[in-house]
Image 1 (cartoon, one colour):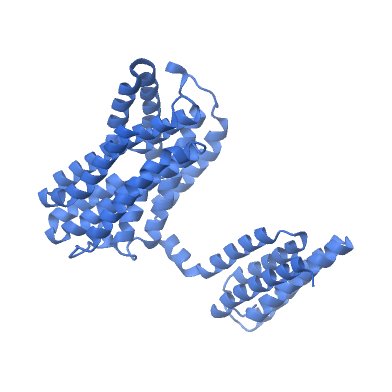
Image 2 (cartoon, rainbow, N blue to C red):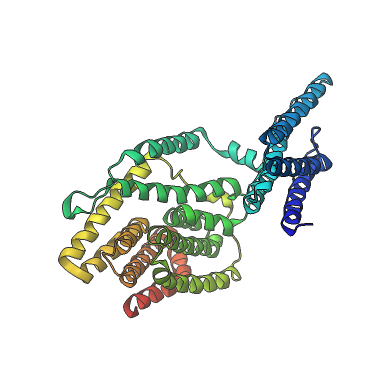
Length: 413
C-alpha cells in the first residue's frame, strides 16, 4: 500500500474513532464509535474515487446519501417520542464525511487540525454551556458592540499619519485598541470560565492577563480585611505582575516581530527571576484567598476601548516630542511616567517606533524596561497603601528584585 494513502487512512480512522467515542459517551442515538469510523472511511473512499475518476458527482452523491440517512434516522427517532437533543451529532457526521473526503486531495495536516477542533468542541459541551451562562447580558452587549464597531470602523479609517509631528495614524491607533482589547478578552473569558474554580494561583494569573493593576487593587483591599491572607495576596499580585510582563512580550512580538528577539530577551530574564521568587513565596504561604475576591470589568466595554485609544495617542505624541526635542533623556522620562499606570500604551508606541526604524531595537527594549520598573513601583505603592504595611513588606523582596533587575538591564544594555 502507498505510504501516503496509509497515512490518510490512519488519520481518517483515528478522527472517526475519536469523534465516535465522544458521541458514544454522550449517549447519542444517531451515531456512535463504529458509525463514525465507518463514515470516516466512507468519506475517504468517496473523495479518493471522485478525484481519481474525475467525477465530482461521486462525492456529492455520497454526501446526499449520508444526509438522507440522517433524515431517516431523525424521522424514526421522532416516531418513538424521544425529545430532540439538537443537531450536533448530525452536523458532526456531515463534517466528518467532508473532512475525510478532503484527505484525498492531500490536505492531511489541515484535516487533522480541523478534525481535532471538531472533537474538542464536542468534548467541551458542558464547560462551554457553563461559560455562556456565566456571561451577563452586559458582557455580551459590550462584546458584540465592540466587534461591530471594529469591523465597521477599522476598514474605513485612513491609514496615514497626520497631526503634530506627523505621527498619529487613525488606523494604527484603532488597531492597537483592537489588539489590547483582544488580549484582555482572552483573559476575561478564561477567568469567567475557570477563575473561581481553579484556585487562586491560576485566578491571579488570569487577572494579570486582564489587568495586573486591577488585580493588585482587589487583593490589596481584601488582605487588609483579613491579615491571614497577606502572603497569599502578595503571591497573586506578583504572579499578575509576571503575566503583565508576558503580555508585554506578546505586544512586542505582534507589533515589532522582526526585532522581537532583540527586544524580548531582557524580559525573559525578568520572568525567570520572578518565577523563582514566586515559587519560593508559594511554599511559605499559610492561606490563599478565595477566587471570588477577584473582580474585573469586561475589557470590551466601549468606554475602556476609547480611553485606551486616547491614552495611546497621547503617548505616541509624547514619544515623538521626546525623540525630536529631548533625545534619550526625554524618552526615558516619557517611558517612566507612561509606565506608572499603564504598560500597554508605551509598549505599543515604542515597539511601533522600532518597527518603523525610528528607534533602535535595543533602545526600545531599554525604555520598555524602564516603564516596567515604574509600573512595578506603582503597584507596590498601591498595594502598600491599600493593603497595609504587612502587604508592603511581603512585596518588598519580589518587587525590589524585579525593579533592581529591570533598572540594571536598562543601564547596562
